[in-house]
Image (cartoon, rainbow, N blue to C red):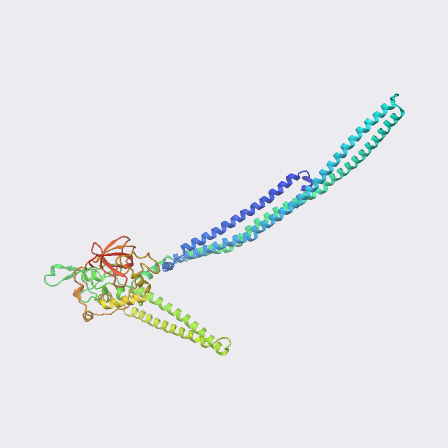
Length: 589
């Protein structure tokens, strides 16, 4: 169908239709633009979501489970999906939105040009119509005047009273009017011919050409709209394979989940290596008067008792209770008055992880050895590179001074020596842990045997090795500690490294520690009160948990190691971090 022939008289409607078409195309461009904004926002929110749920450094141990690793892999795939949405938005903006914007601008210019041409043709036709009407009115006026002059001449010629001169004058006027009428007639006929020719050309050639150009422009607009819609689909289709790969990756990550493996990892993470305690024996008090005690039970401990705490025979209830203290247990104030013998972390070396259960200790030592080996390989590779660089400099001094490498080689050598020493040390710790695991009794002796002097030295060593915590512990007792931060405030103090070893009761006696002093039931005097500022879980041996706002009695001040000994109303005693509490000392202290 041709607009020029079918819509020859619909100039105004065609002009309005083409304008609506351009407006519609521009509207489609705005839709794609807003969709791009949604895609970008969706991708950004997906990335923020993944980032907020990504495991923190302190949670890395928990994410060793297959279920947790699968969750992390799923989040990584979702992060990649977010990237694909960004790709969609970028391609839509660069191809579709930009193309539509440029094309709309071209359409507006082309439509304006065609409409100006059509308007010019319309004006020409209207001018011709005006001229035709003007000549027609002139012809009509001349015709009426000619008729009137002819009528006057005929009356004058018939009137016998008029002179011959008056009759001649009337005849001449009539002749002149007839001639003017004939000229007007010829002019009207000529203008009519021109107008008819222009009108025919206008509606058969000129206007149809303009309408045809507008039709072609509109069809081109529709084709471009079709093209850009297809391009939008193709842009999204191109990322389809990558999206499918992401979805396949999520499925693959889910298939990696192994409940049995997670159970094994939980065992490996928390297994202590200790053996379950023997059955609690029956103590026959009726024979106590005769100086003997009878034992009974279904004997996980075997027969025949002995005084050796390391034997497999039955043990008294007091012995079992003494050996059953856990890392989270509490100690009575009637025992272990000396500070050095209460905590495993005051006497155990942190480097050898002796405060951990045997299995966990071995695991930590192996991890440390692997870490040191990796560092040795890295430093060795760096040394090889420096040696090669030195050889190159010696062969060609223009490249550099060989002596400039000496300092780096020396520093590298010192690092390697230190790493090898550390490797040997931790290998010795591991060999000791594999061959000679410490028994609970020996651990107890070690905790009870440290002297005040060694405790002070250990506290000093701890302060030297951890200057940040040491500075934080110098805060006044009555002042409010800073909120928990990674570098200051309520940081758990580090354990000292000094640890005297004792293997029997004679060593205790040689060290000058009176065993009867630890059995004294006298309680320590109260020095003041304190209030908990933060919650403390009490994970370390000898410490006690507390909640925010809980109040205690202070029975021993901080000696520089960052711990204060407190007592509850139920006489439960233990140590809490000094920076976690606010202390109010009595005036007579």
